[in-house]
Length: 230
Image 1: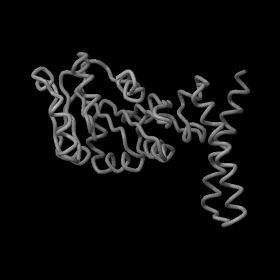
Image 2 (image 1 turned 90 degrees about the vertical axis):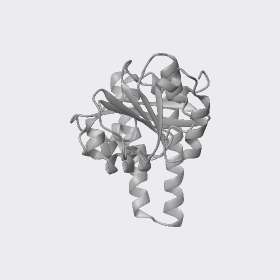
Image 3 (image 1 turned 60 degrees about the vertical axis):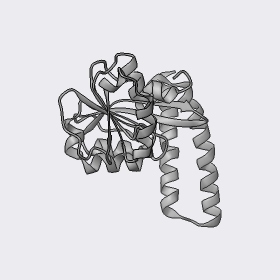
């Protein structure tokens, strides 16, 4: 797992002794690590694809078979609620994560917490969580295979309202002035300035301009916060 930075960042957010549901487990790398390292002794690995689950089943030995169960299902459907239960939803876009939570809102609210990982439209996910009274406990960037991923730990417990900066970028990285966020802000600023110039020259798409201006304003907010704290 040394080459799986994103998965290790997810694992490091999991408290020992939790009952873990891994949604969209694919090869089951997280369940296998949790089981083999004594972090959880009750793991349900799910996927919408039986073929994907077969990869995990082949990797199970007599010890991990006692800990890891598998289930073909869509999201939280047909999973039994329990106490001390958490969920991981990773390896998919923010829209898919939101659809999974919306389809089983009562189940999601009952969880001790969820760990979510997305690399696209995460501002929409943060807004959705806030509007539905999920507190964002941790929220930070990780980087793997030339991609930035947002990792969020969240629980049903009304938290504070997010600022524009916190909606677009993780609160932990803003607070810690992370090097990774500084790199991403530079990339996003240049990219969105270019997008804006192209739109103004070619299409005048007002909705796109609003979204771009909002992100640029969020970047400016963070830069101002950091200047004040210098």
